Length: 452
Ligand SMILES: [Zn+2]
Image 1: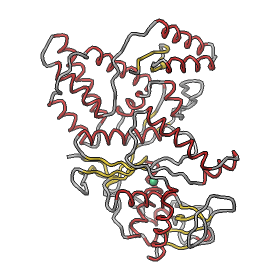
Image 2: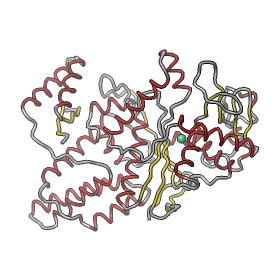
Image 3: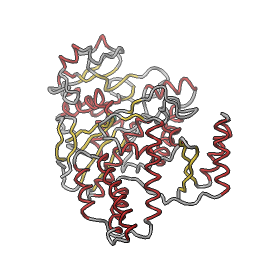
Image 4: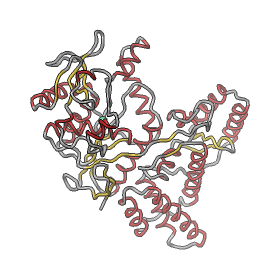
């Protein structure tokens, strides 16, 4: 039985599906005002692994992940750059999906945009006012958290404890709020800002109202699993849940939060990475599979450091698996059942991917031994390695000969980098990528691998 750590209960619980064999997941998606960072990459990869694994188990998964395409930060950037806000959201959304594609993250089944659901958000806010759980002020409409009996359940904090700790005080409208933790469902717009009509005044929805409406609209009451990064647990997820509770509607049955990405201070991976927060640079400089490999070797709830050392280690581990794929290409047979059963037991225990990776490496060692010995068990072990890698979204690339032209370009790239001629290095990298090479930066210099 598949069991996950549940944020609401702080226990590992067997996933109780609303409808056996089907699983609806809502993953909070990006606010499209800038490039994706490493934390975005982590969340999407973690839930891509979850989704692929569940599908491998035969579960019919429906993943809904939204785009927040209206937000203060989008408006601020549009004003600053004198652009239309839609220019920013469209551009950022395409950069987002391009990056996700390179990470091997499958597209969600549904990608609702907040601006497509404003009517439903207005209706929901009206219902909350009718039920006495929300009120209007001079700058918007707020949810009154004291009307929500178990507010703080996800944060594992009561309202009293939040007050003692300073709470979540928003400066804007603070004087008119009935409690410091009350949060905006609707914000009135200033002149020239994008706005939608509402019974209380023109404005835009609050972020927490977007996700509760879109998740319930697409997945229905009591959907199975709500996911996101640990930074979303409070206040975002708490506030989504508070609205559902105040509406009297069953919300997510389970909650799952992945750990943070920790900056590695002072460690420089390249001229542009700085303290390594830019996902796009990581994708340009390394085999995009390296980040998935690193995350597979980290438990999803643990913090992860992304630095030169562990990215190098991931690149090396991938090279080992790729070499195995090349060596065992003609040996593959139906997967060894015992290995698959072990894999399943590990994954069913709160998605223990580090142990699952350990199982892969052990099986590779056994398979290599069997191949060397001409043992008939080799094929089933090779089959199991491929099948497990597939279930984790890890594509193995059979290593191939690097031709003389590519070798020369790689050497020129190393020389340019050593001379700090980054423009030439970037141009050579782009040429190699266009020629179908994965270009990796290792301590030993540039390494090349075929993408096909
Ligand atoms: Zn959300």
